[in-house]
Length: 121
Image (tube, rainbow, N blue to C red):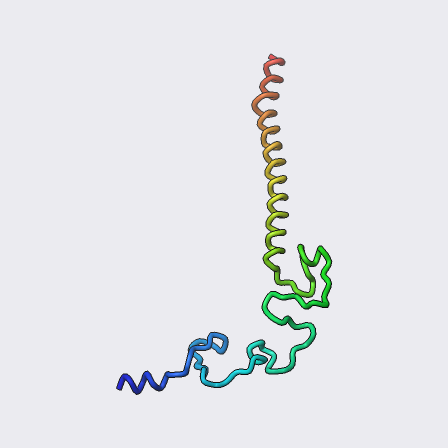
C-alpha cells in the first residue's frame, strides 16, 4: 500500500546536478574529498582550506585584492563594492555633465536665440 511505496523512497533524494528527477542514494558514505569535487584526491597547495579563505602563501596586489584577480575572475564582495562605488562615481560625473549640457542648450534655444532675433528686428 501507501507505506510500502513510501518506504521504497527512504534514503533517496532528487539530485539537481544529474538531471531532472534523477535519484541519488543518500545512504552511501561520502568522503570529505568527494564533497570538494576532486574525487577524493589529496588537496593541492593551490586549493582553499575552506570557503572564501585565501591561501596564506599567496600575496595579492592592491589591484588584485580590490579590483580584479585574473586567475580568480569571480568577484568577491569587496570587489563588487569597489566596482559599485567606481561605477556610481562615473555615472554621477556623467549625469552632472549631461545636466550642464542640457542647461546650456536650453539657454541657447530660449535665451540667446530670442535675444539675437529681437536685436535684428
